[in-house]
Image 1 (cartoon, rainbow, N blue to C red):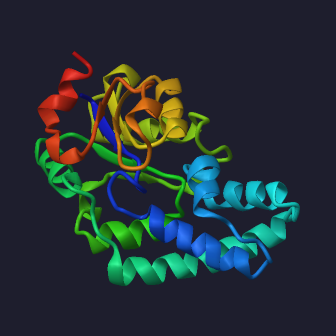
Image 2 (cartoon, rainbow, N blue to C red):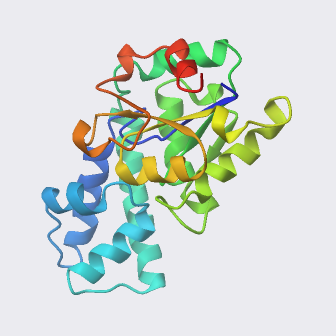
Length: 225
């Protein structure tokens, strides 16, 4: 493969419970009781901005842009507090990242989380140095399922390979239907990991696994064979 791109939340770290709890804490201050069922069924995979916008509209309390910025900043500070003290990698993630990096595969993160969150969490689990590129929420105008983020990640990886990665020789690891749609629309091959959704909801991926603990770089190469 020419490149390997990871989503972050639910792929590298078990962060969705953190995001849910911090969304709930911030939204409670606005009189909104966000249920875990609604979060996982409707908003998982959204970046913070889009999530606050959608939740406000759905719960009858639409937020303006300035308010969304305030809510996002409040949530970010709560997330960073948790990441600095309690973030844990998902099984097999760190090992796969390190093996691919040691094999010379250019690596990137493409996530709907904010850059500061990605930097803090990836440093906390000891893999920040493995990634040549990070595409975060503030780098794109349109979040997943739009392919903008994955296309940008491939362009930014160009200096680290011979002429840049071919989309069809790029592998993306995702955990959500929106992320799979985004990566596939960018032309990449997609491995889905069933940490956040049932396998029946991830069938658009080229392959689905229960855990990255069962995946090697050679397995990923087979996706582009």
